[in-house]
Structures are given as C-alpha cells and as structure tokens.
Image (cartoon, rainbow over all chains, first blue to last red; front, side, top):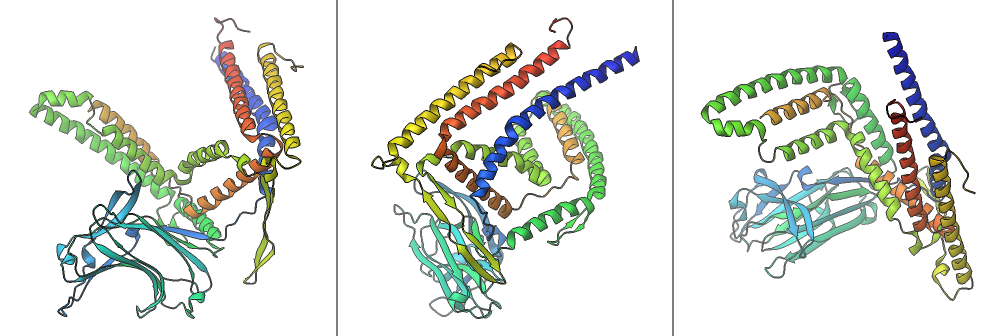
Length: 427
Length: 91
C-alpha cells in the first residue's frame, strides 16, 4: 500500500513537472525571449551607455555643521556654538500646495541667536577634489524664519581663505512675501578657476545672518547631490565595493570600504542567541500580562484579543526596515521591475520620432577622443502635412494598424480553438 | 495580547532566523546608471518601433496577449488539478 502511494505521488510529481516545463518551455522559447531579445538588441544598437560620472548624494546630517557668533559692534568676540547644532526633518510648503522635504539645522542654545552678533554656519565641507575633473553641486534650500540671510558656496584653501566664489545669494523671508525654496546648481573645475594645487582645497557652503536679527532661524537643505562629471572609475569602483561587501557578509572580515562584517557562521550563532532571547522575552511578557490582569481585569481581557492602536503599522514598518537592511538588492528587485513596466507603458515615442546614432568617443592615455558626435535623424516630417511623404506615411500607418488588429483577431481565434477545441490554426 | 504575542513570535522567528542574511543594497550610482541606460534603450527602441508600427496600439494588444497567455496557463493548471479528482469525471 505504502509502495503504491509513493508511486502515485512520484507519478503526480513527474506529471506536474512535465506540465510546468512544457508551459515554461513553450512560453520562453517561442514568445518571450525572442521578443525581449529583439527589443534589447534594437535599443542597444542605438545606445552607448554613459557611465562616466559618479554621483554622491548627501544630506546635511552627513556633515559636521559648525555654528559661530561673529564679534559684535562693540568689538566683543563671539563664540563657537557648534556643539549645540541640531537637525530636524521639515515638510515645507512653498508655493502653496507644493511640498518639499528638507532637513533643517538649528541651534538648541538660544544664546546663539543673540541680537548684535552675526551668525555664521558652515554647513558642508568636501575635500579631495581633483584638479582636472569637472564637478556639479546641486541642492535646494530655504529658511523658515523671518530674517535676511546670505548663502555662499565657495572654495577655501588650507588656510581657510576663500579662493573662488561659486554661488552666493541673499534673500529675505517676510510674512506675505515668503522667501521660498531656491535651487543652487553649479558646475566647476579647479583648474579653470586658476587653482594650481588641490592640496587642502575644500568646497564649502556657509550661511550668514546679519547681526541685526535675534530670530531663532531654521535653515533647510534638500539632498545635496555632488557629481564628478569626469569620473569614469566611479561605477566600476562601486560595483567592486558592492561585490566585496557581499563576499565579506558571507565570509566575514573587513571589506574594501573598511567596514567589518561578522560573517555567516557568527551570524547564525547570533541568530540562535536572538531566538533564545525572544523566547525568554515572550515568557516574561505572558508573566507580566497575568500580573497586569490582576490589577485591571477588564482592560486586561480586552488587551488579550485586541492589539493596541498602531500595532500593525509599527510591525509593517519594522518588517520593511528589516527587509531593506538585510535583503538589500533582492528587496530592490520588485521596485526595479515595476519601474521598468511603468516605463514601458508610459513611453510616448510618437511625439518626437527619430533615430539617434550614438557618438563614438573614448578615453586613451588621459585624453578624451571624439570620433563622431551623436547624430539625430529626425522624422518630424511625419507630422508635417506639407511634406510629400506625409499622406503616404499615414496611409501606411493605417494599413499597419489594420494588419495589427487582423493579426490580433486571428490570434484570438487560434487561441480559442487551441484551448476549447484541442487545436486549429485559425485560418 | 494573544494576537500580539503570536505575531511578535512569528516576526521574531522570521527576523532572527534571517538575521545573518546581509545582502547590501545596490549602490545608488549603479542603480541610477543602469536605470538611465535602460530608459535610454526603451526610449530609442520605442522610437524605432513606432516608425514602422503604432507603438501605443502594439503595447495595448501585447498586454492583452500576455493576459490571455497567462489565463490559458492558469486554465490548464486548474484542469490538471481537476483531472486528478476522480469524482469530477474530467478526462
């Protein structure tokens, strides 16, 4: 009897696998792969990927923000208030209905805002800039208090002397005439700015509030995007760092970026220890529930079946955080697929028909060579009724549309016969 | 308490057992570069396709074809299951 059951189970499994493989095989070999290959080859043939840029996204929290009072009109020296700088997330609305997420800096010590002293805040400082490379710095900023302020972006040398002014702006926030969110977007190359050595050169952003104000201001920054437009090693380096992190998260040890990983064996030991702790905590929780029940029997019974407010939202956030931290690239996969499908569905090529032949360019021994520029062959005449081919092309498109629908109808008939009548070619 | 304890226990079990998995996120610049390249491939492929046949109509029809193909496979799977139940009598 047992032998018969096992044979039956094996036959069912074989039958199921054969069913699945036949479906997958038909589907993949006949329809999906050729279509995808055609699409990708067509696209690749007209595309040269440009990886020659490395982009780093900072928030203001990534920097050691410094705050100083500048001496007052009577010559008294100000003070350093860097240790009391704090951050908060702000959801800023300007203009009405348009929300911007910023991270604001402020000072928890009210003495910093004393009237009569100027207030300087050094917000970011980036070093190790290359002389030859072109950089781009882009961010949005705003102030959330009624005051006048100046924002500067510049280069400082090792003696903290300003050697180049890249951006400066002055705004006043007034009720009814809000200063709003502004964008800073600057490109620069050290060599073009007359800098001969990159030793000690820093890119800095600082804000100045004049001495006449005593208002406690919050200054908000969006993500700060810093891009090396000429860095062609960034992507390769990032891929190697990423692979190194994966390897060391399994094997343990220190990766290329100097981060120490515990490794898989230690990870399993930690996991088992955590399981033990979780069981102990659960037993403690049940014990505590009985103690609480004795004190308040009605609430105790209610809490026995109904989770507290916000419990499910909290668990959802916890699981999402865990998945993001531990599954990394795997958890990003579905998002990438959804973006891809969305892109395929929303692309509208008919607005600007044309073919772009990519530029042929490469770097060799430090020199950049461009053999041909990108050439765009425009087919804008398909929308120009005065062009001699306009009507011919539209008749052709109408004809193709009809063929598409006829082909689709033929497919439906064939599929119907295939499924319900066990075969047929739809002729 | 009961619901919370059961859920906490399940989540604790899930998170502690998988705690040693540490797959890093794909770096943002790789993701951006790959996304930009894929976008470019899709844009240019779509432009090429649209020159010879109406892309928007083709996408809609292709969506219907994919839905039908999936539906047929699900239908065959249901039939396969039903055939295993002798009382239903499907051959």
